Image (cartoon, rainbow, N blue to C red; front, side, top):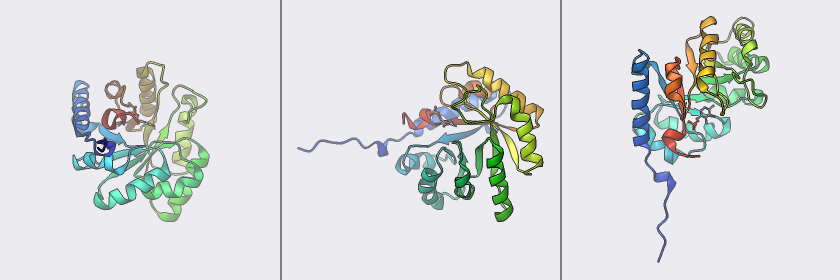
Length: 229
Ligand SMILES: *Cc1c(COP(=O)(O)O)cnc(C)c1O
């Protein structure tokens, strides 16, 4: 007798998606905003196309990936079928991957150093196109983590705008695992306000409702939709 094997690829996570969308709506309403004021970035990193397909079929169109090559392999074919997909790069970007990243992603959330800003600007000048950009802020000042430190954020944002003429739309942060996230969300919002930036990408599976209360315009949710990686 053959054993019946469970294929993870056929797990349907659309109920999770609907639940997360309801929570987002409710949290947005509680803070006096509409459900469309908060965009759900479904983080599909480490999941295969077969797992993503039901989520696409359920209408989700905004996705986040943290590795350029993985994203290219996975999303070029999926985009042929769903051209209106919007992809966010949420992992750190090496200067030598800028070209691949700019031809795939609609938003790069992880701009955090002059060398990278310069590489993006040079390519933009050459191809005449630039994705929307967010500056990643290392709100917890964690040495092992990417992102510009809070005390250097104003100067870096200014440099992106003036020296590189880059379309910086907002900020992104990943709070330290063991700290109260609201302190970090509040700090990110403060930096955005004083720099006139409208987009705030903050909040993940464990804390997206708190992030919305602090003004998140984008929440990046992986585990709560797709399950454990
Ligand atoms: C993986 C990842 C997420 C999603 O985290 P979950 O806890 O699975 O929701 C969000 N943001 C970034 C930058 C990530 O790398």
